[in-house]
Image (cartoon, rainbow, N blue to C red; front, side, top):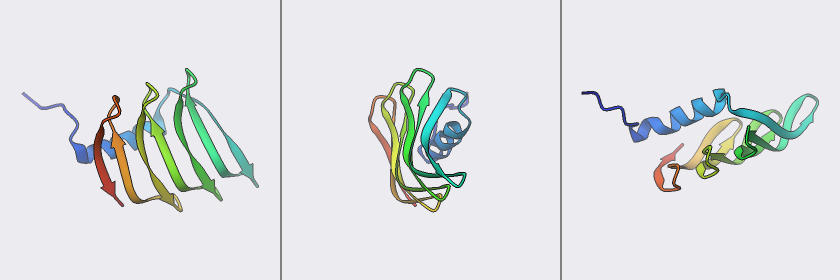
Length: 104
């Protein structure tokens, strides 16, 4: 019988993929300058709970970011530099328990 549990190294990759394609994402709010995202941006699920929040600079993710589960609990947190993960990222399960830390 196959083990269908997520293996910890796969969790971040799957979470980011899910965040990017999630049909539950209804809206995002933030500023643009010259057609490019800048400053703090927040995206929300259809029920109004936060999905992601973080900053952009010249249309690239920059600085601290937080990702949330559909129940509103923190799912992940870390930093970006020029649209790439940087430093230590932490990932949590839907109850808020730390699942893993990943260094980028």
